[in-house]
Image (cartoon, rainbow, N blue to C red; front, side, top):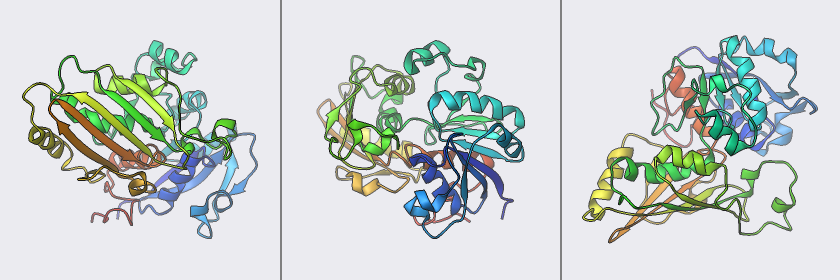
Length: 341
C-alpha cells in the first residue's frame, strides 16, 4: 500500500468539515494529524459534535492559531472548509509551506479578480493566486497533480454543471437557448450558524437570491452560456435537486442526447444515469450524482440530484485529493463503491 499522506482539516466543526473528517477517518491513504475550528472556539472532541463519529474517534478539534502553521508545514495536504474571506487569506499563507491546499470555499473558483469581487462582495486579498488555482469538478476536470491549490466547486454549480455540460460541450443546444435551472437545497447548505430563515419554526420552501445568487456566475463560467438560475430553500436537512431545462437544436433526437451523456460519464462511477426522476433520498449521505434525462421535441430536461455536503463539497474534495496523490479514486468511499486494488 502507498505511504499515507498527512493531512489537516480547517473548519472541522462545520457541516462540510465534519463530512471531510468522516471520509478521511475511513481512508486507507490519508492520516488526519490535526483538525481545527475557528480561533475563538474551544477544544472539542469530534465525536461530541458529529453523530457519524460517535464512539469512533478521540480526535480533538482545536482552535486555529498562528502557531498551527508549524504543524501545517509537516503535512502533505490541508483541507479548508472555511468562510470565503478566511480561506482566501489562510490558503495564501499555507502555500509557501509546500502543502497542497483543497479549498471548499469560493475563494479561488474565479480567475478574474473583478468577477470575484462582484460576486463575493470583497476584493480578493491575493489576486495573484487566482490564476494558479485549479477548478476541481472531477468528472470534467483535467487536474495537474503538480499544482498546489485546488478550488472545490460550489454545490449548486456541481449539480447544474454535471446536468448540462455534456449538452453544452457537444453543441446539442439551440444557439438561442438560455438554460433555466431551478434547484432546491436542504438547510445544511446555509451552514451551522444561527439564522431565523433556517430555524425549525421558520423553514419552508422559499426562493432566495433570485437572479443574484453568487453561484450563478460560477455556473455560467462552467457552461460557457448564460443561464437563469433560481435557488430554493427546502424544509429538509441535506441534498440538492436541480431541474435544468434547455432547448435542443432542430433535428437532435432523444437517442442522440442519451448517447452523448452515456459516452461522457461512462468512465465516472460517481455519476449515475437513472431511468426515473431521482429523489433526494436516493443520494443523501452518498458521493453520487444521479442524472435523469427527458426529451420531448426540442425540449430537454435534465434533473440532477446530489448531497450538497458530499458531492457538493466534502466527497468532491476527497475525489480531487485522491487524483492529485495518485490514490485509487474510490479510496475513502468504502461502503459506497468497491475499493480498487
